[in-house]
Structure formats: C-alpha cells, structure tokens
Length: 225
Image (cartoon, rainbow, N blue to C red; front, side, top):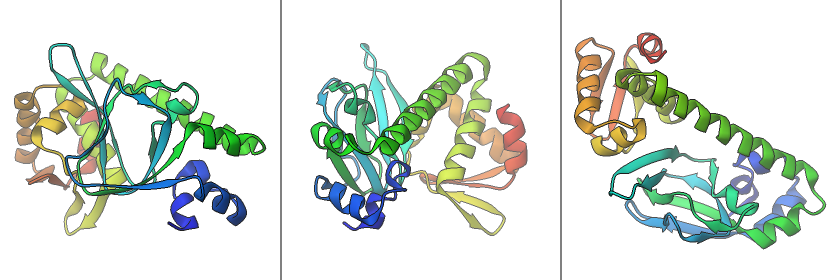
C-alpha cells in the first residue's frame, strides 16, 4: 500500500504525506475473487472500505428471497461508512463482481484519526450527503420513470464510471450478469432484456457478455428522462 492508494478515495484525497502515513498504519488490505462476499446484510459492521481496483455490488434480500442491487462500487469509492457513526447491522451484502483489492479502516482507529482533523470529518459528511441524494434519486426513478428509462439511466451511469472510448462509442465492462443488471434497475430480467433489445435494434448500443458498447449516448440520455 502506498500514499496514493490511501488518497485515491475522495475522503482522503487532501491528506498530507504525514497524515496519509499515519492513516495507513491503521489500515488493512483485503483481496477478493469474483463471487466472494466481504460482509453480509445483518452482520455487525464497524469498518469502512475503499476499493482500489475491481467492482463490488451492494445488494439487499427481501423476506421472500428477492434480491435488489443498491449500488455498484468502483475504484476509488468507499462503502460501509455508516458504521463509522453507527456500528450495527450491515444494511446490505457486499460481493465482488470482479477481482478486488481493498483497504479497510476500523471504527475506533478512524475516530482517533478524526479527533484533530475536522476537515476529514467534513469530507465524510459530504460523502454521506451525496449517498443520501443518490438514494433519493433512485427512489424517485422507481416511482416516476419506466423500466426502459431506468435501464438507459443505469447504462449511462455505468458508462461515466467504467466506460472506455472505442471506435464508434464507449465500451462499458460492467461485469454484471443479466439478472444483476435487472436487480440494479429494480425490474425483471425479461423486461430489462426487452429494453436492451429495443435499444440495440435502434442502433443505440451493442451487447457483449458482461459488457455493452454505447453508440448513441445522447438518445439514451433523452430516453432516461
């Protein structure tokens, strides 16, 4: 681990070398293979995680066994931060959808680090506020946006975070199965596949295994509204 890895997360991006070194001594490294579970919904949590590379899905399971993806976490993003203020049951299950390298920090060590660094505490509050805003947006989408609109919006979000320019568009290696993509937009796999097939038929995108090439992001953006 080096200072750049610690500062990869926006929460720690402004740390000096001295503060980054201090924080690093309290952090531990974690490596996961695809399909491995980092923690499960309902387990007691007292650590936050910063993803160095790979992808993590955060999912919830209903009492009747249905699953929903809350978020896809990419490199440089953190999760589990609620446990820094409220150690208790995890609100979601964290599973690797690609090989992952992470660093983690415990509740007690983090609060000791915060004691004389109020700027970091302010950054964490800002991160929590952004997470809440995204949650509110997702709830509004479920109420006001149809499934094709939600699929278009999800693809554009994945493109902004994981897309790579290629000839004729942007390739998004999202690493999700069709079922996982359906869980992400809160719809059945059949309905999501129908929307994707319609977009492909219009020439807006091209489907690949666990990836998609977006050819017309402007029309997808209009369809997402």
